[in-house]
Figure 1: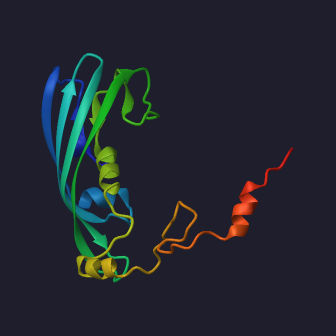
Figure 2: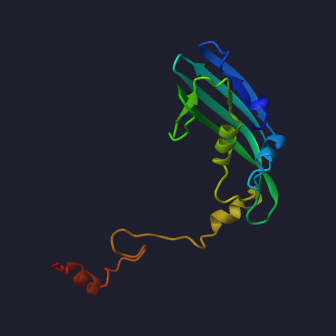
Figure 3: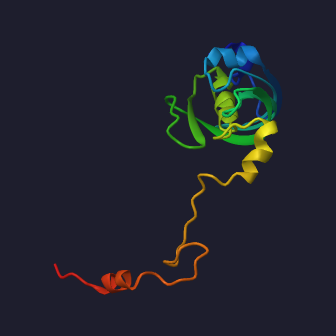
Length: 175
């Protein structure tokens, strides 16, 4: 657990909607110790709907994270604006085996959101991190691109496929 700063006291909450605000900064990212995300400044608006049997949590995360360019190794600010919904049902034991539904023990007094918030931010990190100065270069460079053709012809080439392949396709083997 990072700290109580990212926890919600669900035991004493009344039924209905509740809003919470969180700020994710360097100390938050340092706790997780990942080289992928070391810094950022994100506002998290959490809306929690509590009922007898479950909790519905809507998270809106907006701000910037600091990434390192894969090409130049320069640090740059990357914008993040995402929202996610989670459902927490009350049960006998903690269980996160579902994709969107998490079972929370009935006697659970608080709900730590830090891991969920961190995971949702990590999902926003692009596979290829390019500094904005290098974005234009990337769009002009077609090196390494793969083109697929589904009709048996090469992309951009109107010649029919080699007739030997067509004859091979017609062969049927009896087993």
